[in-house]
Image (cartoon, rainbow, N blue to C red; front, side):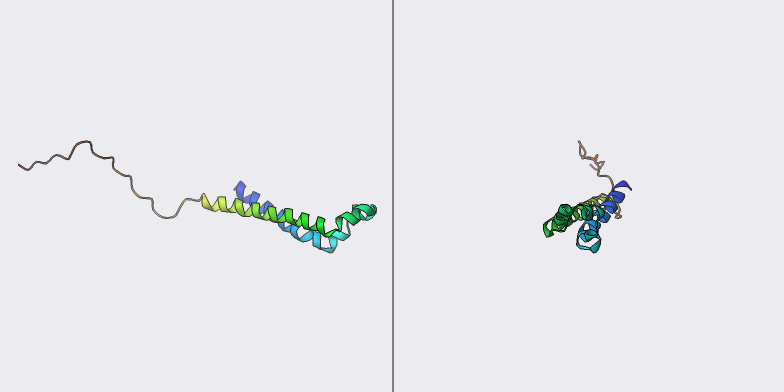
Length: 96
């Protein structure tokens, strides 16, 4: 259950980090508007791309977590029966 929640968290954070830097919400940041040099840095395409890159890394981490969750599931096929150990002596033959 916990790896599935972790994967959901990574997906949500990843998608937010990919989308938000390119939206108008990013331009209307309170801290960036109160200090103009920070606004110039945050609206740079390089910074936006770096934040989006972190989002992509989060999405890939989520995909990795989901791959682990689904690969650890037991198979639905019936497992083969136990294998008999090799006999140390040949079976007894009662024929003459």
